[in-house]
Length: 603
Ligand code: ADP
Image 1 (cartoon, rainbow, N blue to C red):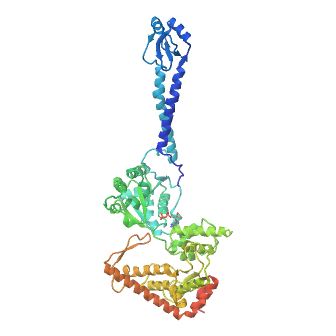
Image 2: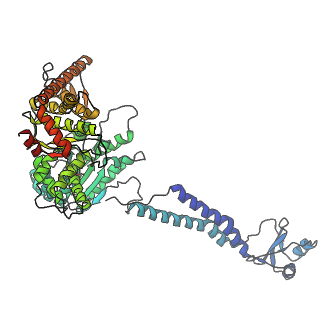
Image 3: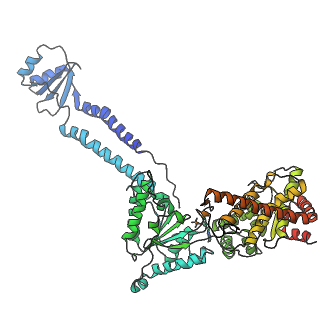
């Protein structure tokens, strides 16, 4: 898709060439050409011609010590050495030649006109043409010489041929978009009844969930041209370019209607205009132009604009009002079924063993986006090749999930014996606390092989099915499980290590959300004390309460975590025997499965 452009030379480079050519021409070629017109003769010849009345004009050039003269008709110029001839003037006057102070025209006036005026212009134009051709070639299209035109990539008839069947999961989004496809197929059906299609559709969701793919699939299904442009491409180096690009994009689109215009990352231009001083004028102009264009065409021209963003909350309200991007299609992270389907779609592109359990892989990869799942399948294929196998196996897929989550295994990371024991107890602490509580996901795997992400080991818990809601008890158990690692260390070694930093971070985040957002505290009831600023990009939060309340929240968070930590300690204390037995087993084997774990636990 990305054409490779040869690096552009700066304009000054071309001006330099033109100037050089002209200078060479003027300083060398012109005098040389002029010189060639003058014939050198000896003084005798001059005298003879003078006597014969064949000389028209004479000019003395004393400084150069030469004498120029023409023939009678003044069509040819001759030169000869200036000898000290005292009678020269008299002789010349007698012969009827004119002694002129003016310069003798050294060449044909027509020729010199051509040389001094016409030729440089011709050279100039030729170089201009050459430059234009080069730039056009660089930009790869006949439109490229026109500054400020949109560089939207057009996939006429959706050359990539992506169909809805290529986009797995996302059924609601597909259903929503099918209407658009139908409209593009048969607009009359809609026009007859007087219904007009929404002009703009906003695809919102986290990165890598297939928004771009869906837009392409709409074009692919409807078999219409697909214009694609990223929001950031509108805002370029030159002021005013963005607006003109928008204008041009819409002009092109209207010519090709019915068609799909896709604007990726629309938040780059569609951010709220906040009226701050020193705001980005260029962006605002571009946005204004976009708003104007969207108002400018009727609902039934057949141009449908799809736009994608991860930050719908930051969009300008003018952009999302009815008549513009009035329809919003959420493209969320896939659920279990969706993940399984996405894995299957991508697994078709590689060779996999027949007995691969995609459902299990999908369960393990909970929370992964479509792009991550595609990556997992590819990692599995790479792993199979690395190990010299001809197809990817279940183990490859499972290992590649861990690679995507935690990085590669650090084969030569050397832990001291004590560290290894600590990690083993830490992980079993997590697993045991999880297993001894009611509402925890079953343990799938425990490992103490260090990973490149810095994790020294981890416990993988896998949910059985989809999980949309979490109860207070589940959340509390989760916090207890997170504190279980540290609790085990305390119980066995009577000391703390740095290994729990990630657990602490997660436990605190959960506890804070419970109190400030989910209304799960005694004191605050159902008051929102925290707001999520961008839910699709990491979900950063900001407090919206007084300093006193903030302090009270902190106290509650601390007491909640403390409570769960104490609970975890209690669980481990009650099961000390199992803790030692399991940790020893893990220490020896380094990686154990959930079944092995449960077998020992239930023995
Ligand atoms: P977005 O635009 O939402 O950031 P993309 O549409 O660019 O995501 O998706 C990136 C890649 O992830 C796609 O090329 C595809 O390989 C994979 N992918 C994402 N979602 C899906 C899906 N639902 N089905 C199949 N593949 C998907």
